[in-house]
Length: 302
Image (cartoon, rainbow, N blue to C red; front, side, top):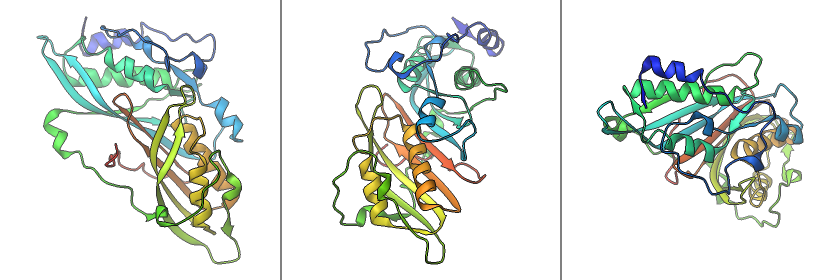
């Protein structure tokens, strides 16, 4: 099937998700054998409501934070009008206000369905992805919005930088670690001293997939203003997530909420960059105050 700028718009209105019930993580394609879709299929996308896991950590209907999930798709290809394969990288920005996350394996299967689909140009592909991911992420919203999508063509690949997260490295600390399930009691701050502003980084973030239990590896950046956070306790807390099962987005929101409750910063920003899986990386960013999101720049491990 061929998709031009007008044909894709018509197709956008032609499919709907199974919206009678809320999707649950265990119903997703994760951990299951999946047939390879050789034709474009937006119905492969599997949105999962954010609300369930947010309720577990005390997040009400309106979160106290802002932010976005920054995705990078490294395996994107389609056919041009003459059948010649085209390739690109895609940066996708999903606002954290969306009611749903998009389960990552379904995202991979969805992108694979482009492989044998004809598109008029890269702009048509970009528009197609924006419409489909927006429909999935904003499903059920009273006032649905959109997601950001940027395609990088091969002539732009060498402009993609690799840069580590900036900040004071917590991993320099020689600490004893004994807890590998979330231990927010390790977090503390010095409320008796004047407030500080710090940026702290660790590369020891690890959690496990909520459904499969497979490891997810990441680097974490915490920027805050307020009572000085005890760095040893913070690193022990980060390590305590090591055997915890949760999706990337949920882990970052847990970290944000635990820091907010225990250390009472005036301003807080939590940003994680996870290593890629299936040609995708997911990099959640949450902030207590309005600001531009960080640039979607990969680290060496990504």
